[in-house]
Length: 152
Image 1 (cartoon, rainbow, N blue to C red):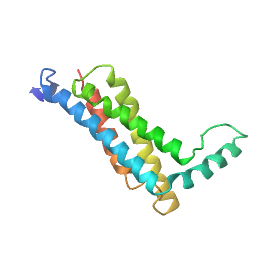
Image 2: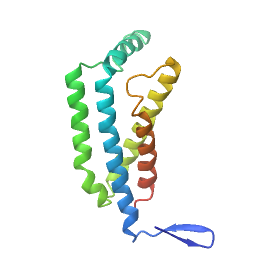
Image 3: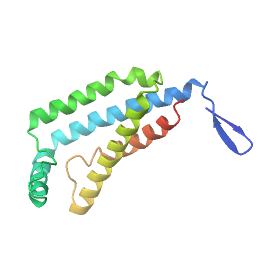
C-alpha cells in the first residue's frame, strides 16, 4: 500500500488496495448508518428529539430549524438515504473521484452525529436513543475520511 523512501511513506496509487480501502470504508459507513437508523427507530429517538427541537425553535424566536418529524416519513427518508449510499458502493470500490467530496461530507456528518449522541448521553447521565451505534458512526466516519484523503 505504501512504499517507504527514506523516512517518508509514499502512497502507491497503482496499488489497488488504496482504492479498495475507500470502497470498504464507504460500505462500512453506509452499514453503520443503517444500524444507526435501526438503533434510533427502535429506541424512540423522535420522542426524545422532537420536544428538544421545538424548545430550540422557541428559544430562537420561532426559527423553523431544526425540523420536527413524524415516524414514517422520517424512517422512509433515512432508509432512502441508506439505499442511495448503498447504490453508490460500486463507485466507491472503483475509486470514482466525484465520490470523494460526498465521502468528506458523509464522514463529517457521521463524526458529528456520533459525538452529539455520545455527548448528549454523557450530559444526560443515561443512554439516549442512538448512543449504542454512535461509536460505529465515529469509527467509520474517521475511516472514510482517511480513505477519501488517499483516493488518487
